[in-house]
Length: 427
Image (cartoon, rainbow, N blue to C red; front, side, top):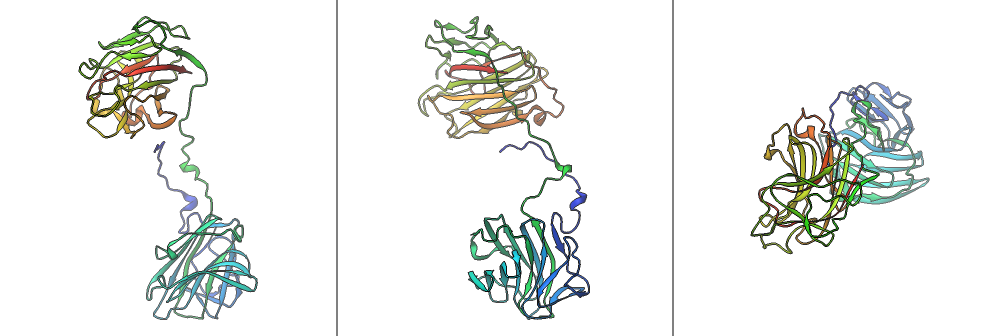
């Protein structure tokens, strides 16, 4: 998972009790509901029966009462509160209302819940159960989630019928409303709200687009071809840059087989962090990739993988990243270390578990994009670690990338012979 930003704000447009609803009404008042103006979304239309508004909510005064509101768009979340006494009669939310003869109905009473659809003069019952029912002397919550293809029904926070329903009939209908099966002067409807299926992010919470950049033009390639010997002094395959060892006492050698290998083994590990680099002419971004084969063939051989990249501003400021493969843990990880202003706190390293994506003797493609502040690490083209320097050090300054290269890192143990192949640097 990658979290790019966070913001907390007071949003005036949704400061009301109904928030993002496109139609809503607390159903508190006096007089008849038919023709009454809702808190938001227009005027109620009672298609049959009658309701009266009271200080406690609306109540049905005739049997089979249905009241509707027309929404601008189909609704994705509909919610209603129903206050009951000991005398419970059936209530319903109607939604996907095409007209008074075509709609869906979620009904609940003191004995059961029922899902039905009306199509002109015929009713179809899709589900009924006595496991869910209105509670007496309580404020009951009825809720519907509907994305146009599937919908879920909830009563008092429980998923009614223990399932989702998939049905697209009347999916584009925009009406919603309430229904009372019987006249009941001690059962009250309150706080009806219907929200659209999609809601734009308020401008106050717009964090802009996340950092996503990548190199589009190859600047340097290295195929590690040539006679066996130290990589120091070799000119890159393309780009005319020369390899230098900037950090450490270890050796990375050409093998004579178009690869470069850390000169180490399980009995003689690499002696600490070792970095080979080349000049980089694009200080604002570098997109590096290389194929790495960790040493060994299986767990238990004492082999350790610590191969990776370095992005270098100067001797006092650079970032290193490496894979971590070791017998002492059942998985593997990718790690990043920060040497800034001449100091490195190892326990500030940022790392992530990568499971079986890295294994002994199996080549993987490591890629990292870095713009001096933000970086993204990939294994086999899968993004696995994203950070900014300011995530770790809030006052960190952007680095200039003056050199780039490969590294055999130290991370609670040293590399024992990782192999590098097909180095590519893009801008």
